Image (cartoon, rainbow, N blue to C red; front, top):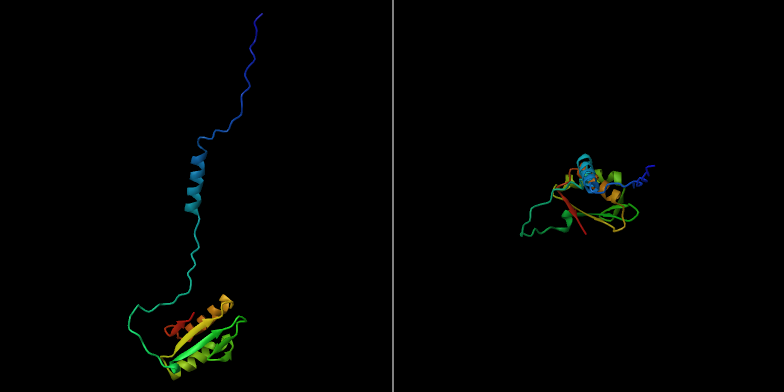
Length: 133
């Protein structure tokens, strides 16, 4: 009688040699297929660098202050955000070279700052803006 040999039991093993290749291909696929949303930021045109100092009179500068609560002050007077445009247009009618110095409190909301900038741009004062620190 012939003796039958017992077969060795096969081990289930996942091949790991090409695992790095698959991960690399998946990475490339997501890099190509994904779009990156770029923030555009605030569109301001900055003046060129010059060493020439320009002397300004105090009556040529209007201070625009934004407090932490979102209140806007034009030269110390409280103005509603929606009325900034009309007030700025009045000031520009008197003096077209008026400069608007914007300063926001460090805890003021970003949205309030942007809304004031938008009001100045709508009043066509976008070339007369000075951002104070």
